[in-house]
Image 1 (cartoon, helix red, strand yellow):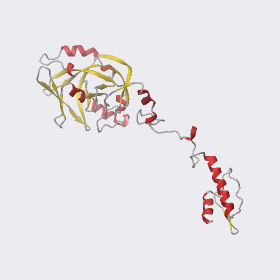
Image 2: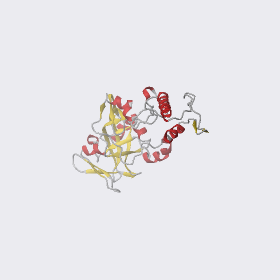
Image 3: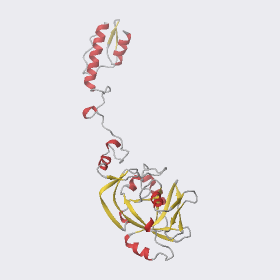
Image 4: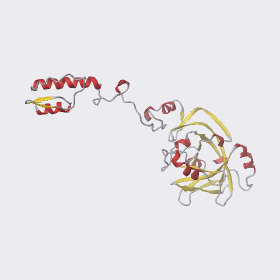
Length: 292
């Protein structure tokens, strides 16, 4: 009996006990008036009636009376871990579903450990400029051993360009590549010589900068360099890219470490300057574009 009464008190009922009135919070208007009959059978019946009332008010599976959407499902208000937009989960992401109808890179492109892709652009803006810019027009490319392709978010980097009829879904970045083409760069050798090089089959991924919180715009694939016959030595402070020529010999290209990541300094030769840059290259150094 006492347990039943405690249950009723928790539900805000008015209970008569031995001529003394105990008043709890008033019941909702939708509830029927309590009869005051404290017999065990009557109390059990009234508790059952109240439980049925609660079920009808709250709906199935929602005992707290919280408003829900159609079908009794609470709307998701979080952020998608795939596209970064609000209102849906990664498993429901429309961009990921759209990628099912598009081609996808066989090898996933991964951010190296330590890259914060959730940092606020406003917070990291000044730091980002220091990370991606060097003297003059030399830009720092993030050297990534997990990337299967070189990438850039800048359409103007390309000396030739082909838009993709079917977008490529870059898995590790969760973004689409919309084009592919050739980029000409100049990299500094260990002896100070400027070495012209050409990167082929570079993916144009407009969302790359945003997904990296604007800390960089270009990604250099160390995997791609190795596949083309070059060597990569990662041993701080002697990180470098060893370019091997078909005619023998090679050139050491130093890389830099900053913020726990590895960067390749390279000047992008924009289309208007690309021809002149190649023409003025030292005759003692051959173009490396056929192997990068």
